[in-house]
Length: 187
Length: 280
Image (cartoon, rainbow over all chains, first blue to last red; front, side, top):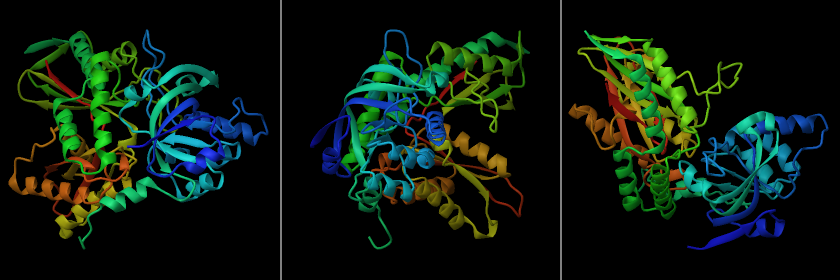
């Protein structure tokens, strides 16, 4: 199995090479953006305010971790459902977001906006939150401390195991995978 | 009349909350093993391997299997010959949840009001369903229920004269439209009959039955097999990346109903299938 090693910040050159279904080991800084943080970021943009985090070429992770136990740097942090952030995503793409880590469907218009902005949708497996946290080596509060667990955190990832759900060329693992394995009346 | 201290109930609930979040039930673990062996999709196999690996790390280190540690659903079978003393039963259950979510470093995901939505900061209140039964025991079945799968669950009233085909269509359609969102591989609970809320309730009870255990009535066991086959033909697969094991098992529960009604509820349980039971 080929695993593509990808570093953040993500460049157009790298994004171009990624195909739906690729296994990726992602390293570098990623930013967790929860439902509440999305709402705040988009509010800031609406007021013409500068964002507290420079999102250009960054990868964001839709995740809210469990509290950090003693002796650890992070609790369990796995992906949440992408669809809930659909309305906020175009604005963040406009700020230069190049990758999103989440799980599940996204609306067709949002997938199209991601392709247009040359941003990749990475899928993280759900239900393996503790395993995924092992690949995060450093955690720093980046913005909106008032949101508590839903604040924006900067995670330093080393070889975080992801798949490419949607690439910028129209490839869609969740759609194609299902077609490949569906058994219909005919067969 | 047997007496049970409220404090004991609180402690048992707290223990069950932690265990449910850290330690996978044996039947789910076995289902993941079988899934890894039997899933033909490489992406699917990989998900099963990750689920097993995660379960091992979580159990050994007492860490949460999933970051969505859920809203806690508690089914209490209260023996009619038991008296809870030293506090209220519901108060004790609530305190148990509060304690566990604090000391277990579990995420606090509950908001005070569905409209206002301020976090209660202690993952209470739990959702409690209490039933009075014979005897002098208290049976507690507890499930941290995460949002992803709950959000793709549903219930409706169907035309009873349309019969089985319409029920099957509703279940398959629910799993199909949910796709990857509820985090397959799933356990699917189907509640049929009663009234709207009764069907929903028994669809959640159905989730506590171990994977591989069929309904005791042959006709319904056959229906479960038929539904399982139908949903797995959809090809959604683990995490929706394509595969033949989208659903680990389908469990049907039924209840007598009005001659002119048929309620059907479909409750989905994600791959972080967590629940524990104890008896006091």
